[in-house]
Image (cartoon, rainbow, N blue to C red; front, side):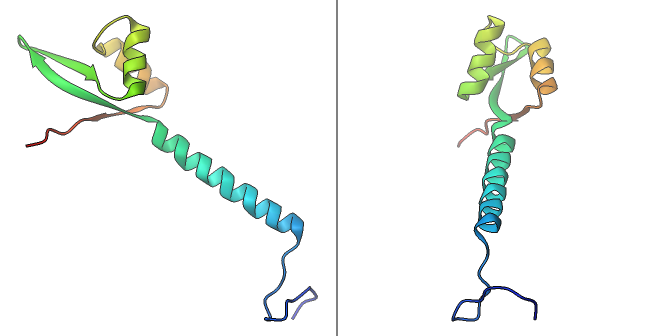
Length: 95
């Protein structure tokens, strides 16, 4: 057994520095997973007069459409969105 401070229960007490590092790692992991989830936008695909159109559903996809100046997301805009690391998810139809 190495040297260290042990509590009455026999559990080794961690230092304040170690606890701070652990908390920092947990915060980083939570933010990383949140960022990964944020990199997904929801769209809805509709066929209008034989043309496949992509309509924004979530707030982020609506923002991209507003920036592009269109109500739908054009293929060029979708390409740029993908280059930014976003994934497009289609909204499933409810029956």
